[in-house]
Length: 626
Image 1 (tube, rainbow, N blue to C red):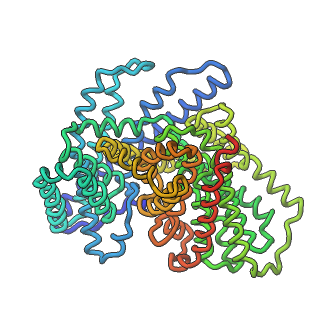
Image 2: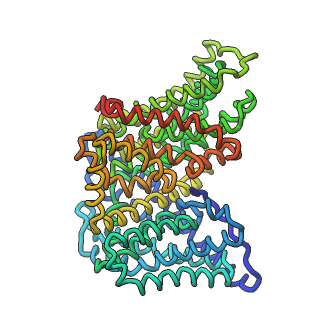
């Protein structure tokens, strides 16, 4: 899965260089505008949410309009972020096939993918306009302004996305490639339109066509997942039902307007600040003094560091990037195989999926109405079980390591590094305690962490690069847009599946699997390992979490326990080769060839699977402290 941020452009054929140069400059102008506005919104959201915490908890005088204003600005942030992510190639997409085929064919796939993006955003513009017209007659209670001012962000965001997508086609595609892409996309669209009577008569068969075949083809050729979900949902509803397409925009708005998801940009920004201020570095330094001298000691340090740091940034790439550069050079000097390092990094990331405040925990809680606080509490022990399983493998693999010349750090050194790291070490516990004790909501607590991290960077560690703040804000905007558009289109797709009757059919089928609860949990584990490797975590959970959780409840499985099992299974799939894209991300961050790691990771994957079975068999590990 590619979530890189690259602003590079393909070379421009001489015949159209002037035309493409104009497109490039318009593209850049839109980019500067959306990035600047998005950065301002991230700062504004941080200030508003933190002010709400201070007013309520410190002065016992809550500000009643903060939530409504935050939600108002959040939709604008999400839509501007969609445009920023589209410009920087930051939307989640699968690039395995594109990179595997010959360059010419890969380039054509990219052209078709870009044209699918154009088709979706153009298709949704008119329904978005209708939705804005309907929303303008609704008034926001606290702010006293029309709901239309918030809804217009959807229209503007999709409009700018359409312009950017078209400009990118102009900048990067030859006329021949463009014509062939139009023929392919137009031809498929025409076939679907001519086959409308047959599709309407197929019943559930049409779901297979739109949500399996079309989504699968789109994802395979590199269409960003959010747009693949969107185009399939719009096409299904327009060709097989009489449902007005403005409903799709309405469902996207509902999905993206959940205030719990406002913690996404806040935690992303927090994680980036932690890396910039050196908090992750001092945490690792302290762990090294504790166990760095023993056999496999740095492997234990890596696992411990991922347990402490992971989940705070909302991005697995950010978590891995905070730890790997600090530890990998020394691990290499100690003779550890490069493949071992990538294997540890990937599986420790999978292990930490349930460690709060994980973005996946927040997402599944928001779409299934499961308590975020309960998920935060329930995720710690299962992650510890997985960490212990990885420690066992790391011990076994490192038992022959040469420790000659290494000495235990003296007590004074341990104390010194602890005192330096102590302020940073308290951050994860402050965040978790603030939510559990009701000091701040899951959304607000991220801003407490941001303010605390800024204080540490300025006053304690004195490592705060003001020049990096704007790029960090832009990166936050892009990741927010990428995640929230998936949330929106997946919510619309889930609604479409529910209206078709598929959800009820799925509930009936899953409830009748052999083996009762044991059979249901077994199928869940296998299904989400596969889905995690193909769709990545958040899209898989957004699509299938709301459908399967009611089945789990009906079979007597606790909702928190089921959620934790689903997230761990998804994490294993995400980081398991050959399809798990997180594995390749870990290799890229560690600058290690996947060929060096693909055979060394399996003992760690097996250990995670054993840990997952233990967690599934003993619900107390997830719900014992609720």
